[in-house]
Image 1 (cartoon, rainbow, N blue to C red):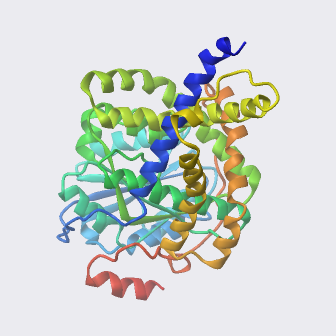
Image 2 (image 1 turned 180 degrees about the vertical axis):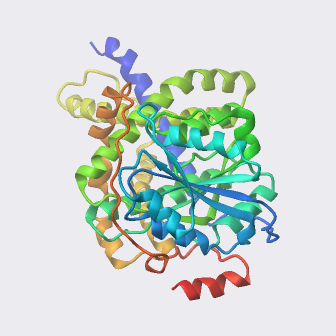
Image 3 (image 1 turned 90 degrees about the vertical axis):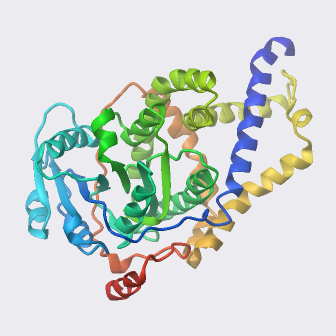
Length: 429
């Protein structure tokens, strides 16, 4: 009886072993600091800061005011706000705050990816040229050092860079706290870990810096529900990895309600499956053909939602196995029980290590107790995303939290750049 099921269950178990070892091993490389880098303080690169905003009158003003205070030569960057299909005062508020407003109205091609494509075409047609573009969401706040960090990375030859994704409202609700903890953990044991060992990271939708020559040469072309991941994989196929700037911090507003968080994550899952279906086959083929570890690692990255569904299926099968052993269990043959125990303990210690590292508040520690439940909710969300993977309707997340930069907390492991930063940070706080 078990012979036939083994054709499915044995490969699944081998896949689970591989991913478990991969995640566990990778995590260590993000817990012990950043790899050494020589920072370049000369401000030479020019930037177009682009914000796509759809009905964001409540928060866009705070972001524009924040961007005007960045610790960087103000002659070397401009702030553009794309008021995308707005029915409110987003354009007026942004213009009053000092942004260069570009209004876009389109019945087709709705969503951030299309708005960025439209803006890039307009930007490249302008007389003024920029070395790079930085992309933010309307609800963001940006650390004063952001452009200094990106300038340094660009001077070192990096072409696509993702900044540290933090949360500006980590204690507003249980949901925003779960998002904050999730992002803190991901920043360290995923993005920083990958950067430390030379693998490509993945863009996170905001806090992104892209060399304009890359955009001109290869085009944007990322218009799905997860345009950040789509452009990451497109660039990786062209041999351009995404790097990680741990000290370039962006503060994002997280949803307050479980319903809003559910809808947002379903959209992410839909987009992830869409990108995976289009890029895994060709990236896997090219990675094997060229013996390219970066491409193969990109395949692993895109396979994550499938792995989550496979893991959930195997957990259900393992419960059935207790009563009806319908397959051959090889997990403990491949890895000894002691190793599984270490990994099991480690998955709970990693979040603790990250919260210690960033010196999280006592409230975050209290919320950490319910974090596993939040993680398990990804299983039904991912399943729904799989079923809806071919639907491409953009859903907008309403942002209402008008927070200034002086209300956010700078992560303890972020390094201040240059003597002027200390003065500016004190003035803002």
